[in-house]
Amino acid sequence: MASSSSSAGKASEVGARRGKTRAGTQANGRIGSVSAPYLLILPAILFAFWIIGYPIYDMANMSVHAVNRFGKTTAFNDFANYQRLFSHQLFLGCLIRTLVWTVFVVGGTVILSVPIALVLNEKFYGRTLARIIIMLPWAVSLTMTGIVWRWSLNGQFGMVNATLSSFGLQDTPVEWLATAGTAFPILIAIGILVSIPFTVTVILGGLSSLQADIFEAAKIDGASGWQRFRYLTLPLIRPFLNIVLVLNFIYVFNSFPLIWVMTQGDPANSTDILVTWLYKLAFRYGELGIASALSIVMFLILLALTITYAALAMRHERREI
Amino acid sequence: MEHPVRKSLLMWLCLSPLMLVILFPFAVMVSTAVKPRLEVLSYPPHWLPSEIRLQNFADMWEATRLGPAVLNSVLVSIAATILCLLVAIPAAYASARMEFTGKRLFRQFLLVTQMLSPIVLVLGIFRLMARMGLVDQLPALVLAYVAFNLAFSVWMLQAYFQTIPKELEEAAKLDGASALQRLQRIFLPLALPAIGITAVFVFIYCWNEFVLAMTLLRSPENNTLTFQTFSLVGGRYQVEWDHVMAATLVASGPVAVIFALLQRSLVSGLTVGAVK
Image (cartoon, rainbow over all chains, first blue to last red; front, top):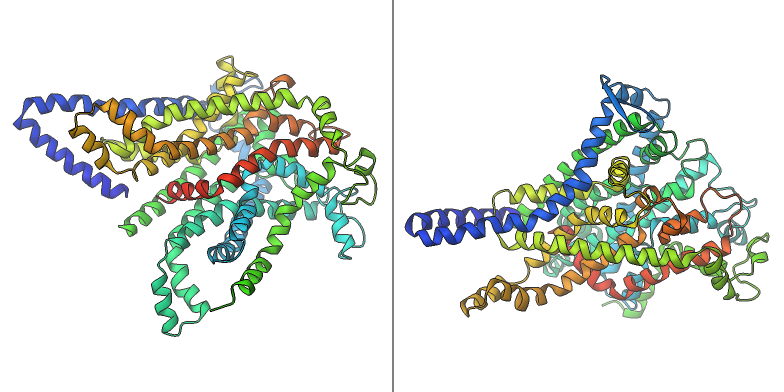
């Protein structure tokens, strides 16, 4: 879509340039219309530079200078903040957990969302109700979700233990969030749960764009249900899957409230990922130099992902034309 | 053809595990919120309370000072939504309807800002707001929320605007309507549903936002609903879970209902925005 409109744009520019030589009035008319789009996008650009651009600049600046607790920057310090970040005893653990967190949440979300979307794409009684229920976690904030699950997973009074033991699935109550072995997997499971609505929505959008007749034709030719899924559905919704993968990767990588509300990275940093550690560095330990270096590292990772996304989205657009 | 009732049962059976996990926290919220306090902290816990205590909500409202928090959330969310639309609509109009050099760059710039979550920038934003003297001020949240929703809003709106046929405006132009008249009488009325959907998404984002509220607000009377509810849980020795669950119900109930009612149009709107 973008490429088609930009080529149309080039055509109209060429047309206008020709018109300019022909008639002066037309050229005058164009001056207003040339500046108009810039005036219209200017407030948006200013806003983004002010609230998003300036903080990035400020943190980049802090990250290469010595910074005291109060945020006063002094001398350029030869990337010492970055060295301290990379050699910090918690850095590697947080980085690995961030990768595990992101890969498992995104992978789990997409693997579960494809069959869910396939089911919701079928016509059946109560489909609207089913869709509403599945979209519900999207409307509730991650903070509230985290608070409610934290209470549900309470070792003594939580309904998770009560429910499991009433079905005879568990003998002794488990302190789910205070046990290092269970806290992180539980967080991942809830991370998947809250990522499903958005993912299902986009995949459903992809499924509804498919034409029914090729599936009919494949059926007549004797392709089994699995074959139709494997060789028709999956390749055709591929662009949607790519977009969902990258977007989820970015959202989950940045995901803060769920972990903060449920465990704050505890027990013993065993559920800390980069974003929760970043918050602690900046606002609990006053390590502003390391925190800003970490922010910049994360910004660069996200930038790389964004470029991947842009490339995928563009490829999708080209295919559409 | 398969029997429709049998098929429906099968579909619901497939979805039931997920449904249970999704509805579980809502059940916990309702169950805990209406229990007498003694039963909240009794072992083993039971789903059904001995009596339904709606008085809990009134007690909670008093004890947790939720009223001012609700008001703050409403004010911040509405202000941010309006300001965001005022900035995003012209930008979306320009990138949907006009040709200009650097349009691609503008779109890519938006994409980059869309990828940034507040948490990555929270330190820089805190310093910026401190420098402007806006820490512990609600306008700081409004400004930050606008910035973080701009990209999404421009993206969604321009995807919609492109689906409104240009010919209508061109015809009006031939009939002698001025640019402003065309905008007022033709374009904006047609774009209204899209603007409404975008507004709902921005509003929900602001209503639910956590990191910036936690960082930029200081005094309890300025707290938004999300942060106030969290502060009932975070860093406390004894948590009054019946109050907390009543508060989460108040905080998420209305948004969940709005979302459920508008679900169809929100979802179709987002697919236009996300994929195009």
